[in-house]
Length: 174
Image (cartoon, rainbow, N blue to C red; front, side, top):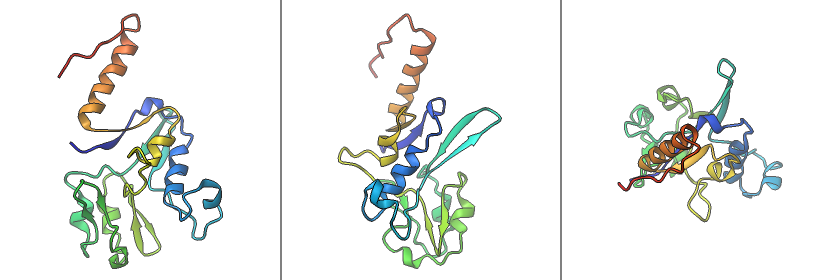
């Protein structure tokens, strides 16, 4: 089962550490202090938006959808899925003609234009443990890199700890 970046919205502080880590990981130097001065400036590939109605921060990152509308919308075929399931336009971004069909097709709004090339989460930011930079940088562990099954189990455990703090939950096997 492939791993994805999941969000525990209730934990997000809106600190934007994930955005900084993402941009730094995609910089030439891969060093925060050096990346600040790079030209062109490194670009983040995720967005933290604050919704005031619910006073909630929403980190948005590419879902690498099974039914990836951005791939279907790409007229040049540069947007594709790698073997491990990551949707990307890396490999030949110079073929991108800047039509922005992928931007219009993405239901999450996480593909953005940059000059003539679309940029999005490409998972080219994995650290030595195989964890994306945004996940490693999150101080509250609001971002989780896991399979859907692992995240589902984690959510159940979180709920159990909140609902029944007097008991220690021991997950059942299976």
